[in-house]
Image 1 (tube, helix red, strand yellow):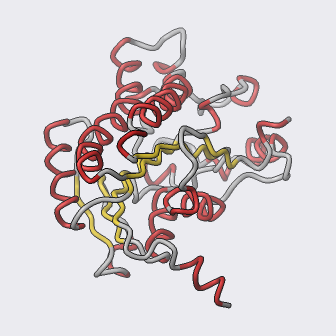
Image 2 (cartoon, rainbow, N blue to C red):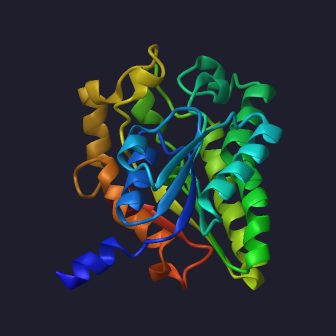
Length: 276
């Protein structure tokens, strides 16, 4: 019992900036950090549902990540509200036709420079920009921890056969940007190590998004496509795709001192997809 209580409170007092903490996976991860005792400031477009449940721990700051100056100001406000920062979690990504998702214009034979660059901006520059702003504070205080949420496709690419005959597909911008995010993570881990700053990736595997229709009414709900879901299940050694709670222990570990000797790593939580 003592061990369980200790594990649950291992983030007590930690001040965490979390970008994209109101999305399908982000909301569950951010709320889990709150249950572990952390103070969490969410940066994003939507107000997270958990905000009212943790009035003394949870904060929300609305920001447009495509507006760099606005984002810089919001990050400064969030750090001030938290009273400092110990951990930065970079989770925001633009899953929309603007970056090529579920749009014929996002296919590799069609993609424009504008769409491709939006994907890189969302997947690489947003984490870089947040890390620059927050990292300066971490360098001053001589300690910090950055966790970048990547993907299974940070070291693999999608199997085109899964998407044949379907309107949904994984655009070229996604694996390219996530591969780049791992490179950024390793670079930060190397160059900021002398300042006491660690940087790691968390890479989820297949977590079908039940919010797809809520976020984009024109997007198919992946869970309703039973054939597609069965294909995804068969790709996983454990025989099923992930649910958001499967990421709770991993994000808790990476944000805590339990991972104090881990930096430049990519922690993969994919149900065994990548070993087949």
